Length: 181
Image 1 (tube, rainbow, N blue to C red):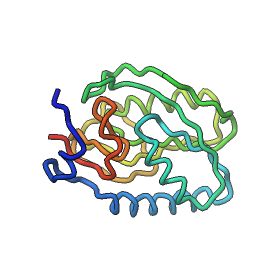
Image 2: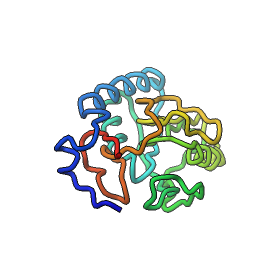
Image 3: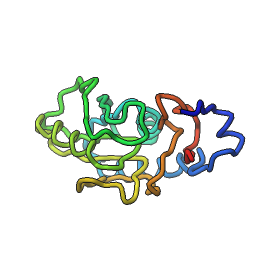
């Protein structure tokens, strides 16, 4: 595996997909939609670790409603570029979501296996509603049918890094999203 470094991306060696400004603009739009839809509610936003932490942080700052935040950590990739299809819970939620409005916040959705798994797992706690927010969704990679209620951007079926998205736990701290070729 190549040892990619931040300077490789900042130098223009890899294609920029979404600049920090593009990401922040879309987050403001998503936050506006969520604020409108949940104006009289106090939803629980559950960030899927590790990838969604930056997106969730920026999204919460733009919401104009009361909300709570919790996290769940699952793994289906390991250090690979494609999902193994085997999902493991590494950290479960701490809050009680029964009869609550819940928004699961993902960094990227491709096969749909993780969101399907999370949907089934969280519905067992009997939330009042359960919706999904994702910064990115890959075209043509779904293995199961699923719905993303609030979507930042559609992307081609390519491996991307930055803004929380990683390769073997690195490159998450890039402020933009790049295509790893």
